[in-house]
Length: 347
Image 1 (tube, helix red, strand yellow):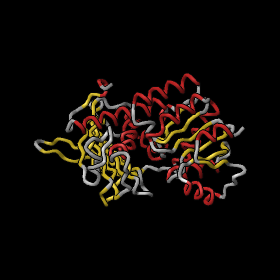
Image 2: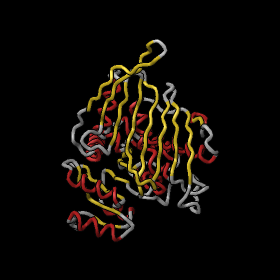
Image 3: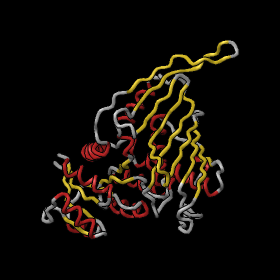
Image 4: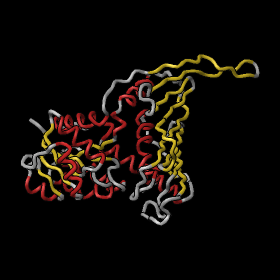
């Protein structure tokens, strides 16, 4: 029996989710909502949707009143997530939500617990955790070929799009933080961030009282001693999507811009000889990665979770909650001029 879905929000990312769920044999899109009439018109035209079969509306409440549902997909601005998801869970629906789950860790925890109480699935679309290269990267690290894990670094830059609701930290950092956490199998216990505002110094939010930062430098400190740094910017024409983990015997490199070779293991170490240190064991191996759309994998996993009512452990509500807590602590560090914030002490 197919899972009956409503998709809320059909901007750029919502359109991709509509495409995937329309094509999925286990899913049936029965309703789409978006407050922007042009978005609804565009989605209807793009996929030749029959309004007799799929309800197109600007209002979530209309869907609840007129359509029988099993699950909803929330692809609206993060500031709207909490009331929508809470209402859906209380109504007995499973939920797939675009990241971040909300902008407040307390709200995230409440929604996670509500899903558990209702015995409904709450899954977050952390798309990179479903990327074949990220999965192969985790497997490679688990082989021990990097030796002792020492530190990591990542860059996520491009010329736009510039957000007007959150800063570059909240827009971009969650991708690399989620990959580091997934690869390491742990969460940072301390964080630090500094940013710079150029474009929107007059736009203030509770998370960004001094304006929306256009560039942010993040440092994550893990209980194991591993340390990761991340460079984020949306006004840098040098587009980068690169993340590396460095160990005592090699470096694992995930470079999304290299479509044919996105995952590479470069091994090597330095050995002391007298007063000198000599590079040894230098090799480069391209790790084979299967061709698959990560978002399709997200949709597959969500529908499977709905059918079995078994949570996706690495992209669950609790994982989403911890990521929002990390981002909140990073925002606090930025407000306090780069002070190191202990996550365990943050309320």
